[in-house]
Each structure stands twice: as C-alpha cells, then as structure tokens.
Length: 324
Image (cartoon, rainbow, N blue to C red; front, side, top):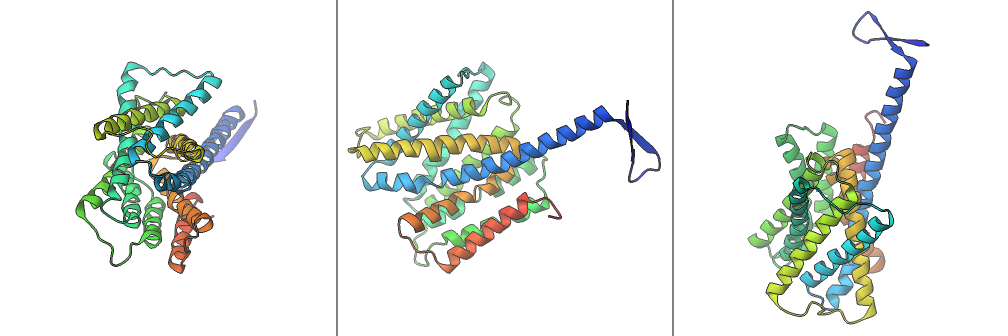
C-alpha cells in the first residue's frame, strides 16, 4: 500500500498517512467546503426571498386586507404548498413526541417575530423598525457567546458593518415620532427571530428533523396562532380579499417570502451556523429597497447607495477566506 510522508510544522518527526486515509481526509474537506458554499447560497436566497414582501404585501394592504388575515393566509397557503411538495417527494409528516414541543415553540417564535414587527409599525416609522430588527445578528452572536461558541473577529466586523449600512438604508426622518412600545416591539421581533435561528442550529432534539418537516410545523403553528388572534379580534376572515389579483398576491406571499425563505433559512443555519446566516439576512432590506426603486418608483439616494455598498462589502468580507 502506498505511503505518503508529511512533516509536522512544529515537530521534527515524520508522520505517515496511508493513501486511502488521505483520500478520506480530502473528501471530507471537500464535503465541508461544499456544505459551507451551499450554506452561504441558502442564506443569501433566504434574505432575497424574504425581501420580496413589499412586492406582494403592499398591494394587499392597499386593498384593505387586515394584517392578521394576510398573515393567516400567508402561512396557511405556504403550509399547503409545502405539504404537496413533501407528498410528491414521499417524505414523512410525522414528528416524534420529544420533537413536537420544540417544533411548536419554533413556530411560535417565527410567528411572534411577524406579529411584533407589524405591530411596531403602528408606533414607529418602518425605517426605524427595520434598523432595530436588524439587531438580530448581534443578538444571535451574544446568544452563541452565552453558549460558549465564539464568532470569529471577521464575523463581528461584518455584523457591525452591516448594521451601519442598515442605519444608512433605513434612517428615519428627523421629525419622525418615536414611541417606546414600538421600539420594544421591534426589538422583541429581533429577539424572536434570533432564538429561532439558534434553536434550529443548536438543538439536538430536532437534529434529525428535515428542513421540510421543521418548516411545515412552524407554518402550521403560525397559521393557527393568527387564526385564533383574528377570531378574538372579530371580523370576516376574507375581509379585503375581493379580486383574483388579491388571491394571486396571497399565493405569491406564501411561496416566495414565506415557504422558500423559511426553507433556505433553516438550511443555511444548519450548514454555516446562525450567526453568519443572520448577517446574510442583510439581503432582505437590500432586496426590498431595490424592489421599491425599480417597481414602485421610490428614490435611490446617495445615502442609500453608500449603505448598500457597505452591506455588500461586509458580506463579501465575511464569506471570503482570510488572505483572499
């Protein structure tokens, strides 16, 4: 059997590795690089797809669709479409008893993030809410430190740089009215999202649960929660949904910024970790701003352009290996 000789950097003796063992190490490293690359791609896809919210949601809000109605159909339709995909792929819908409670908790965290976000808009400008919600990469990093998992200095720099870029992108006007409940709700949304990312990545109880099953239970939990809240509010569950374009926008909202976003988010968190996935979430506001500029005629200012450049540079800095 062929023997390959290696010299250790710090020791004088030679180490010998059999060729089959070396092949296994190389294959393992390539597999790791492939997972890392796929994790980054999935993280970017999650941010971009979630950033298409204005593309579908703006028209629905202009049609007078209540927030809870919109959220219910968004999650319910996404759950139906994902179920159809799982049936086509002949995947199991079942979860073990010890997994079920945590899957429901994940659904509550994700739905809670949506509810607190929309409620914050009633108290503070959307730009300030966007800035505060993007605190979630910081929260994720702090939670990971609490778990004794320390992000690299490159990741910390990327977090600070992307947050600075978001401040430039979403800075509210000087005469904007800021109320404490809105600030707390926006921060609460960021915290809910942070816990969702960390649990998906770190929990051993759901390690063997596929991304499809995990996402499905989160969607069903969210849909039930929104239905209960709407029932307490009173009113028609079809309020504001009067035309075919309204249903089309609901379906688009369910598929792109909900089902696709949640699936790729879970994949990215598992492949590259919740902290880096959180940083890649910067593509969400970037996509929303580009949609507003290209489709809705919103202004592209120098400040926004600088903010976009900072965010993109920070993400590239995080993704590239040292020395690149």
